[in-house]
Length: 377
Image (cartoon, rainbow, N blue to C red; front, side, top):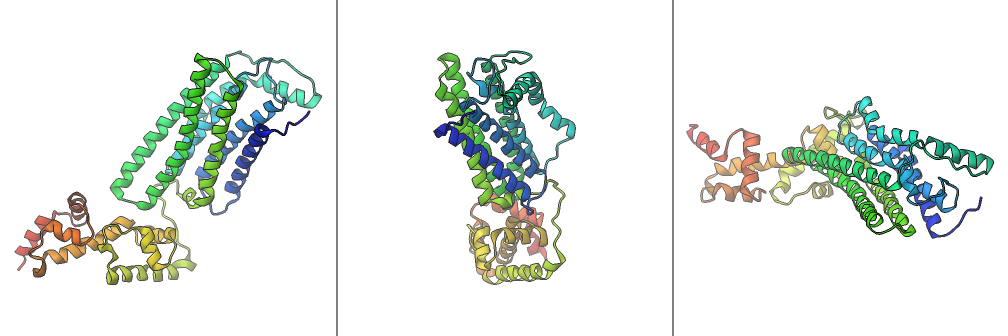
């Protein structure tokens, strides 16, 4: 058995190795929690195995009949990638999946694996005895049909994932949680990378179907999938905190007793800063800017607001803005100001958001609030 050390072999081998290494990092990282990490690791493993098969083919180790055209599509592992991506996104958004539903997601993989079990056994026998066996699958189906099945499966799962992300985005807009929005943006990067790889697969399918098969196409396809590993790995290494999102919407992170005094002190400093320096008067105030003023990590300040103060960043800041507006609405010095003018002075940048937030926090409109206050002797 001779290993060919040329560009494609090295690229496929390194890519699959990197994918496996990311899996170990995910499993061994004690800061991580939840099933989302398991699905992410399984996703990377399935992609790595899919790529590694090409390394075997490139070095004439893998064998299936006498036809190597589109051999990569005959790997059952390919039908695991989209389900694992869907289950990862669903899990990190805090949505559980029933065991029977997981089996349903794996159904296409199980059917394909069963069909190609003779081929896999032949490969094992060849590795052991170094003899060539020409074992066919139970049902000999054209590679184009497998490629088409992969495309259909991938498109369906990408639509399901897009639907989940859109629904989550709508919920975030209602609660105005910046921390949750970071999760969605990160997930969008991951999903987009798989979407681009799917586009490459689709264009290749059209080229093969309408024109002809050329060997370089399969390397373009696998290369686009290999790049996904680096995109996922890069985001994981640079933004590992995103994997920490709890899988239960009713989950509230427990504060260690040892951190209680520190969090209490930091919360008092945060409130003191807001009340004295009034940074909320800036209409473009961001969590990162507030964290910089406090000299605290952004993630910690977000956790402080969400768990210790039991609110989110936007509601926290807007509550001070509304209180400031309520005072100025009754202040004679601001009688020449319109209601919107006062709102703009206090950090709001449009009428719609101001009216929505004011009614949310006070239970009435600004006009009805003024009238009610004028009736009070």
